Amino acid sequence: MKYQSQSVAKPYFIAALGLFLGQIVFGLIMGLQYVVGDFLFPEIPFNVARMVHTNLLIVWLLFGFMGASYFLIPEEAERELFSPKLAIALFWIFLVAGALTIVGYLAVPYARLAEMTGNDLLPTMGREFLEQPTITKIGIVVVALGFLFNVGMTVLTGRKTVVNIVLMTGLTGLAVLFLFSFYNPVNLVLDKMFWWWVVHLWVEGVWELIMASILAFVLIKTTGVDREVIEKWLYVIIAMALITGILGTGHHYFWIGTPEYWQYLGSIFSALEPIPFFMMTVFAFNMVNKRRKQHPNKAAVLWALGTAVVAFLGAGVWGFLHTLAPVNYYTHGSQITAAHGHLAFYGAYVLIVLTMISYAMPYLRWNQSAAPWRAQVMEMWSFWLMTISMVSITLFLTAAGILQVWMQRAAEEPQAFMVVQEKIALFYWMREYAGLVFLTGLLLYLASFLVKNEAPSTITNEEATAAA
Image (cartoon, rainbow, N blue to C red; front, side, top):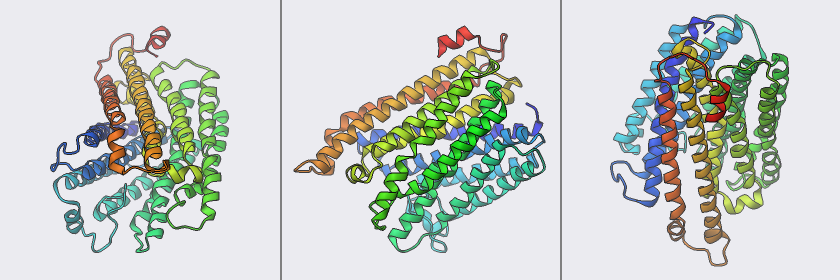
């Protein structure tokens, strides 16, 4: 670790992984409720489990992004973090606010929670992914402003690189776009339009900048390829991501009451969205093939390559499958959407956060560039368990979605929703079993950080090949 203040990333990473574990547990609860409808009812109704599952996803990824920034930016700026104390204070504010919000979801009916938290004064609640109480949203804005001030001052008073400038652009966009969660117009079409300005322009806009900058940083450190080469790739990738992602928002405007031209604009530009992800895959493998050194952290390199490949499959290929308006007319809101969402989030954002944690934790945990070889082998097994199980979940949901679309929407005599759900229940059971494998992989990943340091502290090429 080059700078002492990078150590503030550690509690952020630990909190992120803890919340990730909670997200998967609630995902398994939801999966079981699909086939056993009264499981844990009325203690945890399905709508509450889903709300907790999706909110934990957002919060733990934000913790991961913040931890990655606190580790990355001092090294890129070549100076200590502007205020480590502010970083720790914001950590506790964010963690306590997030924990109290989850407790509120579980302990209090949602309507009552809205009354208790001042939603009447500034109505912001009730929208998917943005269910947080108004007071929690205000807390998120305070944390985001403090975080941006801290990392921004570090960059302004230090070295400016393409990596930290792109990262800062993505983080600033994340904070600015979140402000639209406070805009809750009475008109339902406007409400849906601007809701996507948060949800879509996060995950298919500014978050891609954050992802690309973190990936570039890890590849610079693990491959030894000239920074200039990686930075040129980074410029092209983020340009394509923004060109396709901003207007690609239109594929959410097909059926919400917006003008008809969005069916053409949305189809064209969202069909181009796989391009930056494909470029990212080519970029990652190119840099690894051109590497000038064999970095001892083989696990981090595997996570980085996995990020590029699975992001292309989930966000690119599975997104393209149902993004054209004539196809989306039938598939919208089906299990095909769920399949795309699971693999895209896992590939693009879960894996990039785990990549950064895998790279940074040896410095934070053992004060060395790579984890002990046994820990790395555990990480590699974890990668394959989680990735194969997530691909399996995606395939099961895709099969369920195809049958759902055919029986419920495209057949000459469409069947009722619940009748179709009964007929595709087998795929939900298979999804649940795959989810248990995913949980096993995550527990193995967590266990890898408990391995004690021992000689040799690096993994050999033969051991890495055997594990991979």
